Each structure stands twice: as structure tokens, then as C-alpha cells.
Image (cartoon, rainbow, N blue to C red; front, side):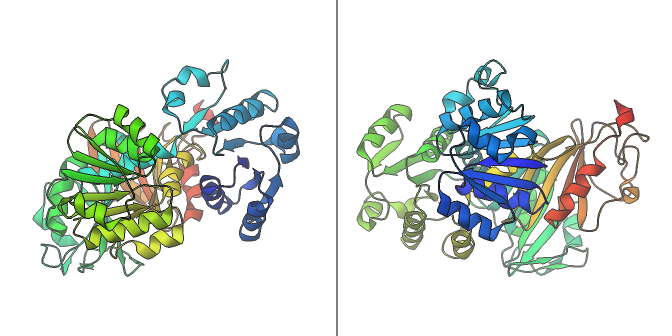
Length: 458
């Protein structure tokens, strides 16, 4: 595909990194020449310095024959205007805009052909908030992603010493929970991927990625570690868009405290959150403030400011002072990988939480969702099978007869309300939601082709 990306910030860079590795022809537009130079040195792409809301800039970038335009600069208005120009002047088939404001998200009519003419909107703040809310609901998990409208979950949990499955082979899980719909997809041991076989032993400290019917998730977690008590008391450092969205989303079942430096922002937060939420004007790296607000009694401390260093420092401080669990928003990938699993329980990358939402619009075939798992070590796709045995390479075939590339695995099939864990003799039917895991990103294009129907189907 020929893809134009407007904006070389965190989101734009993350998108470019993912799409370049799949041999796409990519041009990145930005007004910052130095930032573009760094990108061009690292990645096989073209950088163009200019304003993406100018027709001449888009023309020079090659918009006339582009397949996809992704606009992800900081300002919502610039993204929407750039998409409008790309669509109306250059007839780009698909335009995607990143927006922050819920005003645009709540009024889809503005994105119609007679409006901004945007095919898809992505909102990093909404994606990150949704991701964190799942971690609040399942406090034992390191990562939780949904498939098939929430009927199936992929969950990563760190196995604990003394748990029923510690030092036991994987096949023990099936013996202990014969009625549970579950499949262990991968084991990460000391940052190394261990292929899960029936006789593979789960060691304490292993990160176990499993796919399960959502109804059985808590049963399975109890086999890997002791259940944590429900999250009730939450402290959020940072009252920006993500902090506000999260506080609003969990305030009905959690006691929430928000620490925000900017006094005017505090006053705004007070008008947006329920009266039972406590808004504090202060610095989350202030030890005295954390002590006064009883951080030691918090079930969860979340550092969600826009500053990586502040998030790291406040999280480390909160953990040292007794917070049961800490989660930090860390934009720099290297920082996140360095800090996670030590004193900081979970490091969340905003770009990684967003990239899955965006990739679903780039994939061929009817791909419903795409998720990056464990910092991109593996990727999961949910694709819908269409056609029949003549027009499709998967419909009407048993899984063992499907020509999957080596390194790709079908984890589960969701058929209406029925969840089927994949076995070698499971037959794929039309309209099935098929969840596929790939060990290497380069395999994705081959998997996508499997789910494309031939022209005779139409």
C-alpha cells in the first residue's frame, strides 16, 4: 500500500514503524525537519517537511495515488481539515484522523461525506482509558484484550510461586478445569518466548498469555496466582484527558483521588467529576502530599501525566510508600520496558494501546480487531470468515487443513454466542470470528490473504 502519514510524533512514529516492517510505501509529513531526519535514518521511508493542510504539500507527498491517509498531528482541527483535503482534492480512498476531543467522537454526522469526510476516527486517550479500565476490573492481569464483542479475552498473568499451576505442566490446567474454555497461547520467561507444549512446565515468574471464554477468566487466573482483592481505592496522578476519562469511568464503583498541578484544570475537573471524587491541586512527586493523602492505603496508583519522568518517579514513590499496585503511562518504549516488572507493576505505552485500533483499518480482509501483545512480541487478529469452500481458503475446512504460515496459530472460533477453542479438527464456517495469533509481524499479510474471498464470491 502507498500510505501517507501526517505527523511524526509518538503516534505517527509508532504507525510508521509498524507499517514499514510490512513493506508498505510510506511518506511521513511534518513541519519539524529534525524529527523527520531521525525517522528517515531509522526507517525505510520518505520524509517530507511541510504543512499537511496545504494542497501543495499533499500533492508533493503523492496524495494523488495514495491508498491510505493517516493524520495524527496534535491539533484535532488540523487532522480533520487534512483528511477533507486528501479526500476531496486527491480522492484518497481511505482517510483516518486522530482526535482528542469527545465532541467529535460523539457527533459522527460531522464525519459524513458532506462534513469532514473522514472514514475512521481514532482517539488515543479513549483507547488508553479503555485499556486501563480492563486492568482495574482484573487487577491480577498484566494485559487484557477483548475479542468478539467481549465474549473472548486474551489475558497475560504472572505465575506466582505456590499457585496450583506453578512448576506444573500446561496439560494440568485442562485436568483441573475440564469445563473451562481456555488455551495457553504463549509463555514469556526472562523476556524470552517459550513455545507452550502440553508438557511445558510453568515456572514462578513466567508471564502466561492465555485465551479464554470471558466467563472463565477468573477461574483460570486463580490457577496461576492468588486472586487480588477488588480495586476500590484509586489515586490518579494527572488530570489530563486520560486521567479525566478514567476517573469518570470508574468513579461509580471506586473511590477516586486525582492529583493535578494546574489549579485551573483542577477547577474544571471538579465540574466534570462526581462530588465524591477528591480533586487535589499539587505535585504527585511530593512525598508529603502522598503521605497526607494516604497513598499506602491505595489499591491502585496510576501515573497518567504527559511527562514520562514524572510518571516514573511518582509511581516508584507511591510503590515505596505502600501502594498495592502501580501503573505508569510511559511514552518512550525503552523506558517502559526497562521499568515494567520491577517496582512499577505495569508500564503502558500510549502508542501501543492505540496502534491496534489503527491497524484494523489497514488490514485486508474483514479484520475486526488487531492487538499488540506484550510489547509487540506477538500480534492477535480477529478476522471474520466469509464465502464458501470454493471462494474462501478457510471456510469449510478443518484447521489442520488450512494453509497457515509457520508461526501463526488459530486460538479460538466464535460462532454467534458459542466460543470454540480451536482444535485440529474444528471446521471453520462462514461468518465465524476467527482469532489468530502470529509470532512474527511479517506473517500478517499471509494470514490476511487467507481470509480474503475470491472475486467469484461477489
